[in-house]
Image (cartoon, rainbow, N blue to C red):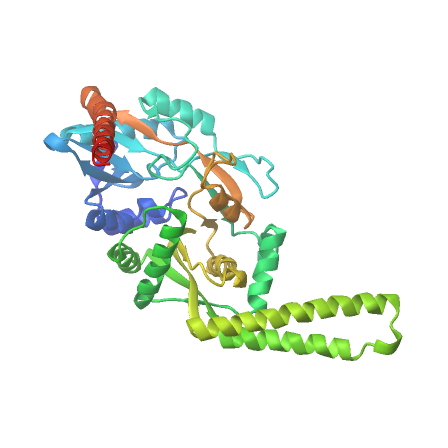
Length: 437
């Protein structure tokens, strides 16, 4: 006889962490964070057998609605073997019973189940699950698929890039694009620095997130949001949040360029200037061009140093670790000194860090499926693609409706009403402007 019970928090987290479907969005840390910062009520539920052994679990987040109704969300789906239909059926029935008792009008899941995968060469590769059968099972159980969305319309991204960290590092780097490898190399030549930060560096991280928000036109969070996330994930032994800070020390950069300039001058000095062969003339032309470029760079960085100071943080990324996986959750970048490619080097350093820790999957946490030229997010997609990860498509969101009438009200009529109000307010404002002109 299988039962759905409220699990002890530590017991829940140990089970989830060690499961093949582990995900930070199903962790104890995320549940506690959602409670503090998102005003959601977390439930840590487990399906147990007659021996009280956990065979499936889920973090279920409750969102309250007017009139004491609510809905439930299991981020990235249940922590369960989706191929075991009977266990999935029992889990579904038990959660539906749980939701109905609390006036839940629907349950939303978005399983971490891949339906398509393309490698770094854009070649489709097989996925290691029977996703078509799982899709069919979910429909038979009563879940309603919310469609194959292409952008960021859903709770979690339906597309992402993932790097398999079980490969050796040379293979991982080999899959980087040519320009990515060149930019990391240039960043290293300029002696940029990548350091692991602490809580006190949240101020710098937040500053860069705000700059990125203004530049990319997206909504970020306040500083307290990031501080709380950092504290909660580092306060739990099973999860970790790490800040990576990409910096430039302009004195070191200038000295590196000056050493390079000396090397070029030395090469020029040994050329027989009075009796140059055709190949020597070509070499002199190339070296002279390099010398001119480096002199220009030295002058530019000296000017930067005078105007901006010597030590600058240009990139700040927050990485979340849970189970055998890592996610690049947030990345903020300055809009100056982009030619140092600190952002690229910062990504490379946390890829190496995650591999050295023995993690198996590095997830860049979100991209798009609509790759048309007019998509404003295409630049983000192309940047993440350069690191050679597998391009992943998940199966998307499913709703299990437990109250059809209220589901219709809250998912159809309320959004329609809100949209009509916004349009009316906009029209009234336009009329007011015309009348006052």
